[in-house]
Image (cartoon, rainbow, N blue to C red; front, side, top):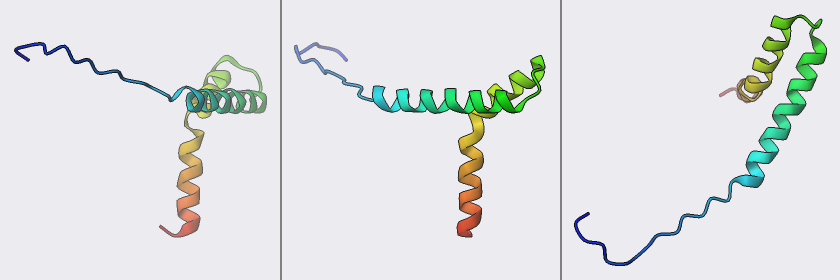
Length: 68
């Protein structure tokens, strides 16, 4: 870290399209889980939390079916 030799490093992050797909999946799951609730405040909050973690349950059940 002592001397600066004039070289720069350019970092390019190209995760934008993937992040957008995950965001759309979250929005779709949130709409689904909120529609399944009866409309109470805490049920809507629970629906938002379920929308955030539903991929975990999908992977868990897929691994269970595969016998892993």
